[in-house]
Length: 207
Image (cartoon, rainbow, N blue to C red; front, top):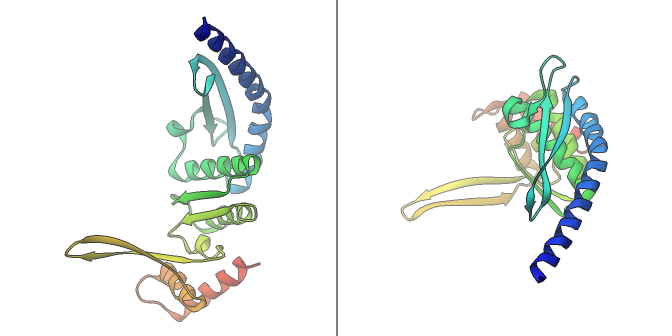
């Protein structure tokens, strides 16, 4: 009898959750488009599909994110249709949306910039920079356009020894940061042009 009472209570709560989710879908879809279009997907379509499922610890809803980068292609689950760069931009937009609603204290992006470069990389970096105004944002990146937008630049490197491999991390000074970003731009042979470009990226990133 106790189990039945609790099941009834959980079912009622799940129904309320379904109601709230259904109400929020239109707003989520609209805000996702507002974030995706500036990130270089002008014809993006994004839909949240909600279907019933057996009661579990997250309710009675099966949620699927459907996406299409083009007007002519059908909406399908993000993981099936998006390219690497598109997935990166969809995930960044989703996390930006969540962070604005939930006020997460820390957000970690592990190579979220996979498959993007140039102007799109800078735009993604600006999104993360804005997120950093209300949360601590940690971004692992290999792109100088994004690295230059951070407040602090950490250098992570691995070291081999007879006893194994260790990972090391340290914050770079201002001049070391210029050198590292120049290295990201030009490779092992750092040129004067790369150094000048690195300084320009850092100056623009601070604005």
